Length: 441
Image 1: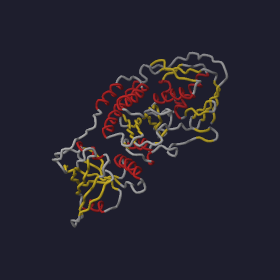
Image 2: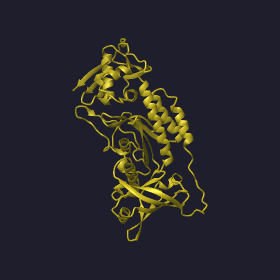
Image 3: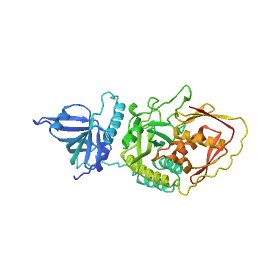
């Protein structure tokens, strides 16, 4: 091909509808509009299959077609000679196109009509410019490589997970101009993602959860593929109906509100993986439509790859040269006692009747407070990892992330206790008042 697919990638953003021309076995032509043309790689595209139409009938009988796409900035038309290969009805490609189609459908009020049945994969045989002699100013977007380089340079200096999370968000804000973002870690046991750091929200939402497969974050995590949506869509929003609620009359509300925008018009979720397993998700959003381009997607995928590698290295070195901590006597505190209640069913912890945390982080806090009541105040990550009562998973326990979550949740919601770092893999639990522990089965 004299023109590469990479060179015309702007044509696949969905700003201008594409067309497809097919031919029946008897030679009768048919032309129809397409909701979506998706760039797969430098030799393939995927077209949205929504209706059992004449187009569908034709390509199954005669696998050759012609698609016309338009550059939204220059206005130049390109014709793609295509050969139909297969239809995918599940998996990362299908889920990505389904999410993007939902955004377009919601934006145009066609949610009930625009339902993706499959992703038709085509080989691109040739690309022709419809007006090769036309001279039109080509406004290329500014390269994001300098921003990616600057952001990456911040990450390589991080020696702890907390700094890695904070520097990632600072880099997104300072170098990419992102105003709203969050980082979530994956808990394989509960199949949920939990927020460990956020940017640009009135409440940090640290500890809030999203179920695997819920919304753009959950789908991106489940399929381990980046998903980018340029329009407002109710299908992939984070209303209270999508959040997994728990609790009851005995323990009160056990939900930390998700910090996302109430009406995002652009969303992108990029999975963070390492060693072939899901570690978390990098999520950005905006109140503006079409805020994130495919250049942003490429840059954030590269950034997420660096994050996953760094997280693995930090996890492997977390316990190095760590010995089990001594058990010095905790300082005796005075004043009115604070009641801490733990519900064993989900390790949810309430302080003075207010919900604080649950799950593994809740179990860790309960252990620390129980040991503190026996006179201990110094702890190590290694001893927590070896404590069978915490029921950490055998693989990828994310202990560092859970401690960060607990540390930040205490900072925000509990003035009585705090976690103070005393060295690599070591910390102290500081308690400023007497504590009354109540365990509820």
